[in-house]
Image 1 (cartoon, rainbow, N blue to C red):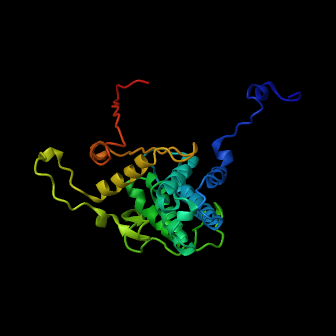
Image 2: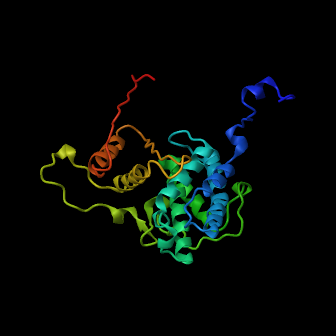
Length: 276
């Protein structure tokens, strides 16, 4: 401290960096060290390769070509992907002696969960008009070629995906099933149960692709609200135009879709008149 400036001394010797100076990779490296023992070094290398290949170009594409519904930061988008990924790798969250996947099956799950997490973290921040462009861009990237000038971002490497998105539709139309290790249409997961007869018309929520996928994502976040380490605390911000059902989706699942013996709900209402 003899040659340190007063500003450095006041920070206890710490040096602060702006987020854009740090980039995404320190977060990735820290997070990889927190994964369960069942995630092998080969799988970690796969995750790192996929992240460096797809995430930086995708974020650059969003910043240059598309509009977001709500502003985000690059590091925030990266962490959203990592948190979503860790929440979904349920087969790996067991004791090593109970781990049931062989090397090939584990790799298939890692790839599928990563692509699904990429879709519903980085790629889902764009508005409705940008989703088709985002879907086409990600398909082109995962096919092996990152288009110029976005190939200047990240590290393409030599990795090739063995279980890519289905060719039909957009990437937003599919959910990756960890159990079957296959891509499944959201429409195939829609509830077809009859409505309870005591419900009033205004209480009925008709299942759609939106109710299905947003309820699924909300359920993932709620059940992984606090992951095994302080780096990962799950939260969900559902944004969109007024009157599109956001509050109804959330309240319906929190009040009717969760085990009341495990979860208690504390709703807080905010309006334009709410102060800090």
